[in-house]
Image 1 (tube, rainbow, N blue to C red):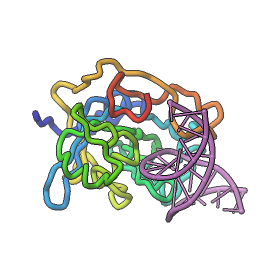
Image 2 (tube, rainbow, N blue to C red):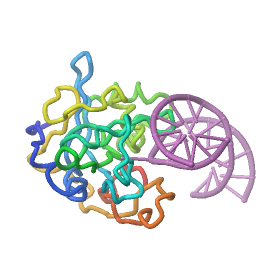
Image 3 (cartoon, chains in turn red, blue, brown):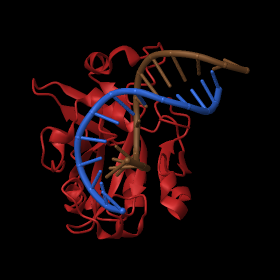
Image 4 (cartoon, helix red, strand yellow):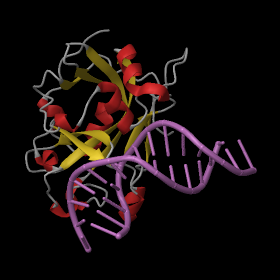
Length: 209
DNA sequence: CCTCTGATCTTCT
DNA sequence: GAAGATCAGAGGG
């Protein structure tokens, strides 16, 4: 487990597509109240382009209590409750006032697996080759890591609770990055087919290949 | 393998 | 009242 340095502010100072691609292979860490580290390699992301993107919560400059974190500076956690049930994690991108973000859709768990199995309950699927449904979805990975809407607004550049570590050598066991349309946004008309989802080819923890 | 559905909260109509 | 950046379980092939 070679620890990497904390992801720096400059990483988020570019377009959401670059950030979405750049996050693949980096490590997402959630430190528990007891100090335990839970972590996983990010293997699937989606970019949300903000005011012009019909699939984004900030389309047309819409700002609500819920999506306020998307307007915060890059690296701020935007965690919202989806379908009234699932906490979903994004990282805001760009300068303050620029409401773009990257959704974390899947991780490959690497640290704290026993705790994640407990959190995920019966739905877990242990296997010799590594579990494939501990973090294989935006709602699943937050549950496994213990991230909830209470973590909305956290500055991951400074927080000791939720942050991203930049690995010396990006861990992309699945090699190449695949580009595809985003999931669950069929209502977004022409934006529904935009190639804004990115995942590590062949990785078993990706939500949908 | 697949499709269908309930759960349950925020936002908008 | 309806729909949604989802998940798990049930049922059919």
